[in-house]
Image (cartoon, rainbow, N blue to C red; front, side):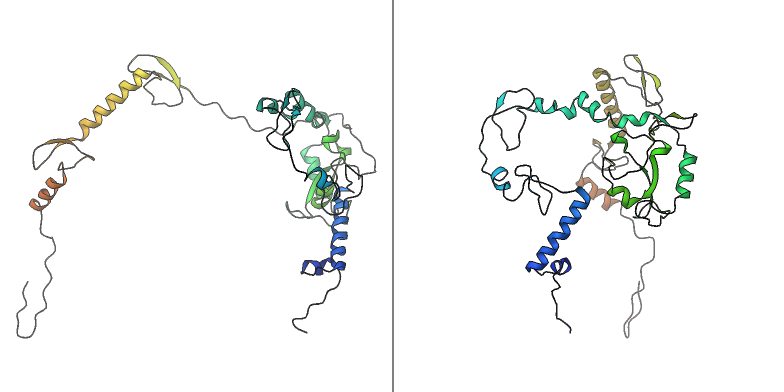
Length: 322
């Protein structure tokens, strides 16, 4: 029957606007299972109870007392220097911008600690471009979800080169640690690679292996330098501009500007054809100095049109005239 909508008590009915208890429960269960499949179960950091719904640090019981409580500007110690300061905002941890710039993730030691695991990929590797090309050509199905792989670069079924043990966790770019899987499975894998249970080889097996180096950008060519000599002071220097004639000295630049202005004044200095007054024109070839002289010049030099006038239409009993 047209126009009749029935509630089925599932999340699809909830998406269509139903807010009964059955649809709410079905929608909550579906989102909880999806979150657990992607991130795992989430527990409250205060009371250690499982959080149902969005991924948060605290449950709905502990959150009002910990996060939503009224904030007071109580002095707290700085996380870097240890000095007591009064925070301007709730989450301020540092007393000044100087201490904020010294936080561990911005110091050289913090950067080295962050990139230590990734630098393990600089070990020996036995994977060549030809081997990777053959590996992609032989891969027909994903070993995880058994879907048919496609040749395109984009899409859920596209071929991705996956490191079984991620490089950030100490893995290497070797034959025993790589495989071809689909894009969807590669993006769903956990960051620590804990979903794989098979054998893994983290060292190169080929005797002709070479150290693995990530692709580096091409170096930019150095610009060509031309030697010039200043016209005013005679200083010799180098510049990227082939036509440079003046150095960076202020006196030379001022002298060059004055010379340029004099050349422009001489180029555009003309005499008015009406009042014979010398003036500086706005453009080369301006005949008059002002609007008044321009009107006189236009009237005196008015020329008749080159085409003949139109023949007037004669009426009854009249003669056509020009």
